[in-house]
Length: 466
Image 1 (cartoon, rainbow, N blue to C red):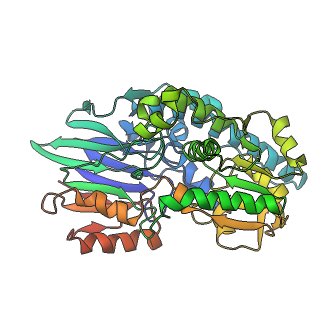
Image 2 (cartoon, one colour; image 1 turned 90 degrees about the horizontal axis):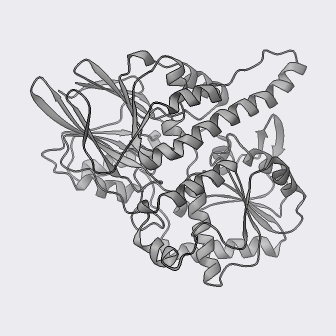
Image 3 (cartoon, helix red, strand yellow; image 1 turned 90 degrees about the vertical axis):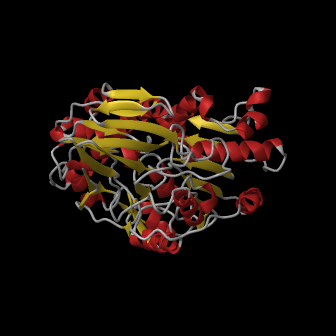
């Protein structure tokens, strides 16, 4: 019985971990790696294992860095079942199609320039046809229902509280008469955040594969967020600028609209138009509306009990058409534009950054983590000039980051998560989905709590657990 760490090993994106048991291989997540364009393209296209040798895939949640390379896996030979929660299946239906669409569109845009320069043309990682083939393999599973997916392999999805449908996965693995309990956190959400329920901690496990994205940080205090967000909006209105928010279409965008709606109902939100410019965010919000069973009691009390839509009010306009998206460039008054992707690596946000980053009146507001070498990360880290869609732009506008909106547990919350498991039973913890600056401080904190065997595996490393 072995674990092979394939993706999100000593990096944040591209989650993929292979569990080998009873001569079968189970892939935990099949995420897309995000980083330098050329490196990301090569990593995503070329698996370091044979996809046809994978017998089943288990998806923790629908974010592209956990699900985005599934169509390519199928394209390269995988034919088995893909297990996920019902809400994750619904989100993957739209997110993977959107991923293929954006790839084909962006490749077409880039190839126009390459053709003029007589350079070789690029091909997308996968197409819509590849996505449709992959989606046919998905199987929806309820939370807290244990099912056997292969001989000697039972799985249970538990609510991770990260995004709609997200799950930590408990695996009961039996080989040669011996049973091991393995936990995979996926991405851990946060307690007392709006919309979703608190994370359901994986307990009584022997081994834990755990994310560490915010392993070196403590999030902003909740009580300060409404005031800070209101002050930011007022400051930009005073200088007649725009607020551009790169945001993940699933989870982060809905949380932002929820918060703005709540401020509006409290008469604290200034008069400012809000545009959600992301077809994926529009479709994702519809999926949210289909799954109120995932919502917490606060969402019911604040909105649903009075039959209000948490994700829509009079100042919000959802944009789907390209023509309406382009019209946003002509607005000469303060507004808020929320657009995907959160790491500013693809999608309409690139055009909004291209058109607004050199205006000192404007603000780019980052509301979540960005992986190393992504455009968002470069801007966050203070780059004076960046390349956007092949064009150089100086970073003249204001830059602001708010950690509160992150859907990832912070260092304190991750350590608390681990502490629900006995130090005697939990034999080893593997930290993934984090760069060294995040993972190693978390490792130290966990060891301080008395858990002696904490590993930070490298890509391709194989560990025997039985």
